[in-house]
Image 1 (tube, each protein chain N blue to C red):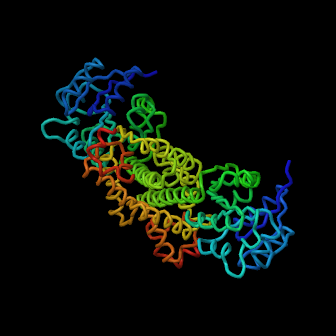
Image 2 (tube, rainbow over the protein chains, first blue to last red; image 1 turned 90 degrees about the vertical axis):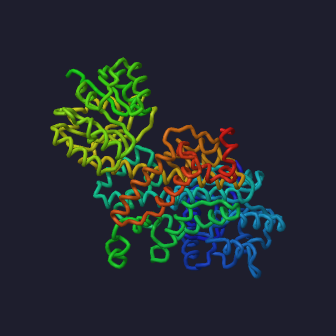
Length: 305
Length: 305
């Protein structure tokens, strides 16, 4: 068996940190961590007994593979193309696995930039949440060059219970955007069904059971149905994040001149959550908009939760 | 074991006819059938070797239990309250099981009218399709008086793999409206996801597989996903029917002053199908609106199918 590669992490929020913890559990040497929030990175470095690199180039230098989990396209450009410091400085032969949900086009842009530095990149789009990251059971969709995929397949498979190669750079992000778009629509629709059921005075546990056994069944019914009923909106996937992903899909739809009214209505609901100060609730919090009287009692609601 | 009751049928479209066929297979005596389309009723009477009753009162007279599957609220009023001829003439002690998807309030209205004739009614709302009707594997939600439910439980269970008592008259129809509302939203959302995937040039079989393993999964992905891709819109549950059911939910939402933008957007899509002559396609036909270029080629499409 080949020696396990040294892995650095850029972006040590809950997803990135849990992926690092799991890879360490699997015996991978974690070389260095970096985050714009230095305290968070420092704490993780202490926990994992690795270097807290003050620079991006330092992470590259210390690692054979760098996993990045950053916020958005702008953050991706900053870490790979920042003028004073970036991951591609001295990056030859390294593999960068980019796991944030960002636009398809940024993956193509970064692959090109990395190629010029004789490094390689992969998209590792995750359709799962922080619990799966910690347990190494992510659903991981991979985009990029097949030979790069082969080079880091062991790492991807350590992180994931289901690693699926999708196609060239950008395609995994496209599929991810579609997954989240459909998931968000189903979530918004479920919140309407349960909200109307509550208004009718129906037993929501019974209603959820009927939904589960009929054409109304969905994955989000399993993951979010009860949370909507009992108003448990602890955040696994925020409403703000849902808005962003539905927005990526909306931008793609505009590009191809497709009219997608359900996605538009869903994005509008999540945007409304942000406007009303509910953007950091879990996506299940959309039920706060569809259950009668819930969102009018915004101040009291915070206590009720 | 008690003697099996004589069962009459009013409304012998595909659902009603298949229910009658299955109950006959189960050994129930089918007494009489009636339909506004006399040829359809006559053919079924010949097939099942039972009476084709020229009147509604004749069905009641010949039967201990009458199962009705009619189009809408107006049809319900006509068969139960028609001036010259109706099911409640001489109806004392009979049980009427009303299986059409109609409004909650009509079930309450008909229960009251039947009570005045010393007869009983039940809602038997079906969340399944013609295949399940033929096989006796309907998902059946029952509304009405518990003691009426007990009287015809054997018949309901013969028709169904899952019989669920919901509550008083009207409540099963409410739950059914919510089931179909959520199902229709999920269907419309899936059509958007696959339509955008097609525009992006993604492999739709792969995309459906990813959906199935992630937060985008749903029952309609199983039942309608491939049909949307290959344009097989043979009708199990028509777009016109979907529009009607989403409309029932929309009316309930208005009554309770709930804003349900996803349901509104879904109803608008199904209404658009009707306007564009696609109302008799299966609900999966909504993909004709979301796949680039499909609905523009309306005439040629019919051949392509």
